[in-house]
Length: 473
Ligand SMILES: [Zn+2]
Image (cartoon, rainbow, N blue to C red):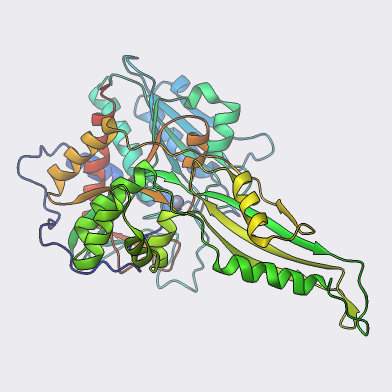
């Protein structure tokens, strides 16, 4: 998962205070040229191992394990693990041992990438191509680039003899994009002690945006909407179409859908949402800025809610949404239908109960003969409250590297592997500083790329973040 959510929003009138991405003078440059070279070599190696669903992740996981052993990690602390029924979907988990002052700090990163076809791309997606200051290849930004910086940072810390206050673990995993051997879920289930942690950082869930070369914001993803699909079903005994009845399931379903089409769930302001609107307002101007600021306070008022809701990309951050996605009915052109059904796809604000959402749908539809049942597995995943113990050092680091850049806590409408760690009770934050242009969204797309400059900055950022967060507050 990786999605620039601001792209289609009205990010007009960017404040002039954002930096040009030059490191602030006072910030110590901690990354060495050797680390940059290693980072580049790891990225090249990972890009050139195809990890799409057809190939799996085992080759990439093995390559990482070899590098870790070479760097001096003891074999016991480098675990290559795959489910018995999916040996081609391996994960690798490494631990840098610390002083045990708190539960470990865990970084997660998926190794699989979405398909990329040579004929769709300008360049070979499974070769790292350097061109005009850009690095091209499938996975550069989602998320082999992030895997590389996490791995490089960990290897560097090991070689320096750094002993963190708590263990630092990194898990490079399978099947985030698709497939039924999700590495994070499986590791938590089958090898919990290996990945048990007090805090998880998932660079996949974070995002950082720039526009016209100006660094604007860095998102700290604290929560994700819960995915749930319900089937709405109406049945009848049917009959000959020459003798129509009022019980026709297609009409009844149509009436139900009509009611749902205008229904809106109430606004639900989580701790994350309040901070989100407060900080996001600083990137806007005029009425929108005022409205967002109001939104961060109690009782924003009806007019504010209406204006913000009119923008669907803002609306989805404020409430649970459900929408019809599929419809089916009838069995013959000359028969009364015996069945009509529709799929209602919901994205639920964490903390709300899917069962209550189901009951609300039933109440709106108001037809007792209609069945509404979930048809997808629902993984409940709570919000990780924007913890100052993470937010404060993160902001300090971001401002030292890019003065003026807003750090914005956010609930994401999509889902990443963080749902599993949050569901397991571990506070999890999506944090990433791979700054990409909000007008040039290439996640999962053609000619995926990252600028060499941004990739080097990402290394600097992740290396320092890893050290900063290993300190026990
Ligand atoms: Zn991803």
